[in-house]
Every structure is written in C-alpha cells, then in structure tokens.
Image (cartoon, rainbow, N blue to C red; front, side, top):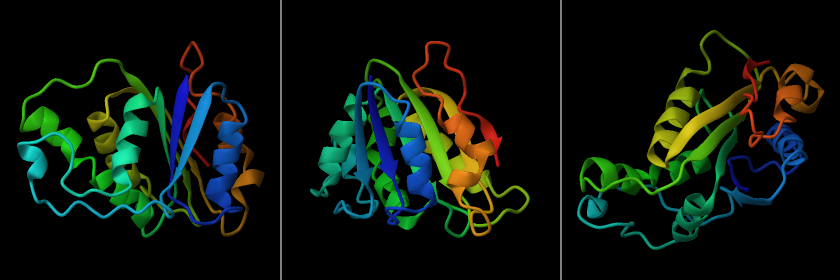
Length: 192
C-alpha cells in the first residue's frame, strides 16, 4: 500500500502535523509526504495546454507530484483551515490537477486504471456553522479527478486555538485507524 499525504501546513509541530503524525502511526507500506510549502509549484494559469496535451506546460516540482499521485493507493489532503478553505500552497498544488480534469472532460480519455482511497485531515482554529463546506467541496473535486473511488474519512479538529488537535480525542481517535483497512472503516465524519 502506498500512501501520499499532501501536507498544506508550514508548522512542523502544529495541529495539522499532529493529525498527520497520528495518521501515519497506523500506516503500513510506503508513506510519502509532500510539503506543499517546500515544493516549487506555480498555480494553474488556465493556459489550456492540457486541453490538447497530456500533462502541464509549466515545468516545476508538480511533475514529481503527478508521479506520486499516480503511484499512490491512498491520497490524503492535510491542511489547516485558512479563511474557510485549505492553505494557499495546498490549493496551488490541487489547482494543477486541471490536467486530470481535461483528460476526462476535454480530451475524452479514460481515467487511469486502478482506484484510490482518499482522506482529509483539517485543523481549524475555531468553529462555526457549516465551516466544512468549502474544504469538502475542494476535496470532492480533487478526489474525483485523481481517481479516488472512496473517501474513507474527513476529520476536522476544531477549536485548536483553545485546545491543540492532539488533545482532541474526538478528532485524533478516528485518525489513528488506518485508511487501508480491509473493511474500509471511515476515519470519521465531522469529528470535533
């Protein structure tokens, strides 16, 4: 089993890192973490190169990220919530998945063989009604374009400004269950 974690936090010891560490503690197989703050990835500029060609005209670290996504059995989006959405570096990385969308919907080519599992880990400084909507929408869109057949969980560790994520058992407990269990038990939906 190969797991790819796209980490959208620059805090090495922060709340998102705590969720990622808990998640990784249960995983078997190869685990690869892409630090979205460290990779040199430009945002999609809608040049539409991918409408006629596979891949992307922009040649940067995203070429390696594409390979890692393709090789992964499990893809995890891990991020702090910034202004109701993922961090900007994670958003930049997923914006470059436009080529995956174009492959299916413009070039009309079949999706790659095999199916992936997906999960999302989000650390939120506070809480408010319906705060998950934008992150969930982005995750759904992202996962649909990289051949994720099943989202095995979305975990939100809320109010981390008052209580660190690692102390939030409602969020940490489901993260400790591996994403690749044979029964595909969900990590947990809307854990606080």
